[in-house]
Amino acid sequence: MVEIAVALAAAQAAVAGIKQAIQVGKDAKECLGDFMKLFDAQDQIQKASTEERAKLPEEKQKSAMSEALESVIAAKKIREMTEELKQHLIWSGQSDVWDEIQREHNAVIQRRKAAELAAKKKAEEEAALKLKQRKERMLLAVVLGIGGIIFYHSVSYIWSWYQANQ
Image (cartoon, rainbow, N blue to C red; front, side):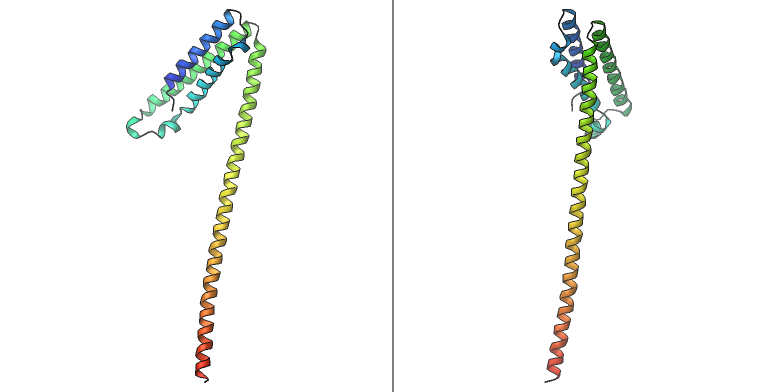
């Protein structure tokens, strides 16, 4: 798990790099690496949530309030940096770049959600198939067991009848 402070520092450095590049006249498209660092840091902060922290051993966990405070403040700072970057792009005449980023971002999220749902559905189907196969094997074992008992008693009855009639 990436620490929130490290991800926040990476995001701040990326925003500073993008702003500086735009101020010296570079196109926002030339700052791809810095944009990627910013959005990667944003994702890392979101992933460093309570769920992931709960997996840590109890002695390494912070108090619930400090975790919440750290997460909320970091998320707020990232939103502010992203909004500041957006405004910087708009005022530098590159609002189309921001719009393209947002469109692609939404498309990527939709693709990921669709893939996640498909994987979840596939896992559920596989689990249902395994359960069905297990039930079928159990039923077969029961039928064979009962059939074996009936066969044994039938043979035993016939043998005893045969010996009694000789």
